[in-house]
Length: 258
Image 1: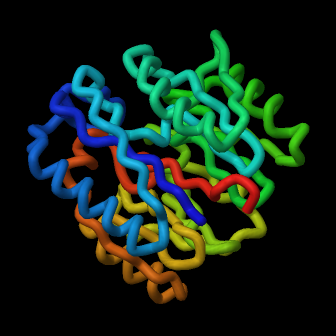
Image 2 (image 1 turned 90 degrees about the vertical axis):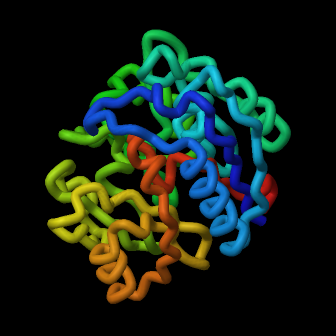
């Protein structure tokens, strides 16, 4: 059984942290409707959705992925690269403690969950705007004894590793080659985003059922479908203004023991 931890949209979403996109007005009411549709897509693809209440004083808290890295054996609570986000993880930790042993990234390491891409027993970690080498080393210290191969991957011109590459099939990745080097992912089938859809590489694979992908990138969606990927388009346009997208709005995990 798959679970998806989510959090309601904060009233203060417009005050979010931004690094690589320009600030634009955000309609919070519309963002909440889009987030509800995202949760419905998760449910339709077989997830039991956990809905945490909004943290209105924390604008970015809807992007729950950044506060934890979850594998089958443990959950690693991160230390986000932006100080204003370091109090977001407590409620998520309380949920995860019911199904995983917890580990923690300590100062002076920084790590955002959006920088961590797990493909089977391989874990790619983006080193860039929010995640530093010390954070990567600490994560490796937690995961390597469990049999995971951890590899640092430099990113450029984007917030997170999963802004540039995500898993869309068992051996298939969706990639934005402007933001990351392909060589790190040799051995996988790579589908490139449409050149006119710069931010289209962030997609969320749910089991074997399908991939949630932003509806505003139809050309990349068509590329995925031609590659045999079942695409579930969801409008996330208001959340994208906050430099978020499909993966960052949930933490998807298997029930312990499965």
